[in-house]
Length: 145
Image (tube, rainbow, N blue to C red):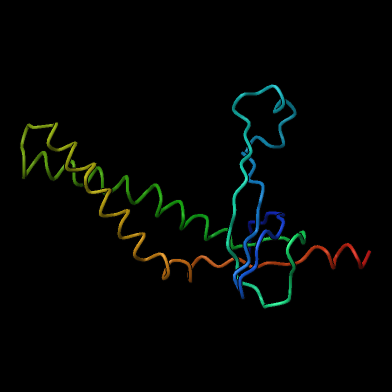
């Protein structure tokens, strides 16, 4: 199974919820010209991962891993499905609700994204169960060498 992995630092621990700061690099991270390129960017992200209590401590260097298929599901939910909704509602508005009125069709199709975002927010607990990350301490790996 293909995995996505990031090295991070444990920022905070609340029970089994571990907050890890990871450095998210752009796809051109390996390019030799990234230092002079304005499109190369890195962002720090805080991700919450479930871990057994006492398995990591604040400040530990850890590896956060998840299945690559989760990335595809996230892209589908964040980009593909909203685009499909936008186009579908636009076509329905132009043919059924307001034929020939592009402004109304555009506003209605953009308006459908708000309930979609609210729905995603309401389903965040259910979605968080599907998007599971594993955490592995790198401090022990360093000690073993």
